[in-house]
Image 1 (cartoon, helix red, strand yellow):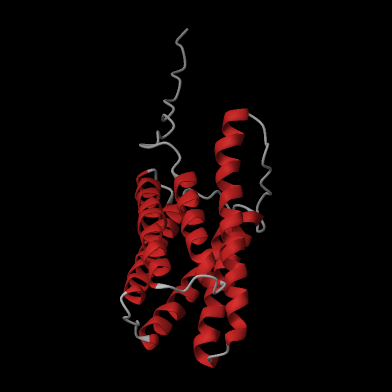
Image 2 (cartoon, helix red, strand yellow):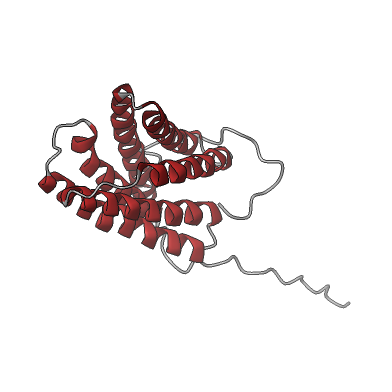
Length: 210
């Protein structure tokens, strides 16, 4: 009796790098923390702008760029796209703050135009991340609110939008920290010490990359 050949099973793909998401999220949280005193108007000196600029460069841009490239190498399409794109937004923050420290103001029309494009990008990414977690959806939604307030503040020149921008920055840092802790601590503990809710939307089929 001839044995029936067993079909070959393709080995599971092996990631090139360890999960880089916590690195990007922690860098984001540190960058937001550097912006909070400026957003609330507590510290608007050249020294404050200069100091915040370097945190935006090293933590906001640096950590998120590394996390984005590593995520793309791990075939994490959405995470890699988000981190890499946002890293260059942090470079813009660095350049703007460094310029303010030297008394050089950025052109508001260019900033407004770019913010509109970022708003469109993050609206679409918010919907996409809703297929993975309600908390990720809230994380991206907060970014959408932040950019919407930035745009409205520039269009109306109304200082009333300064407070929502500052509060959205705090919320962004808080969610980023929670998500980073969830990935780091939950994997170490082997249980959900930091629970993360499931998807907001139901995908029609299996999603290959996220």
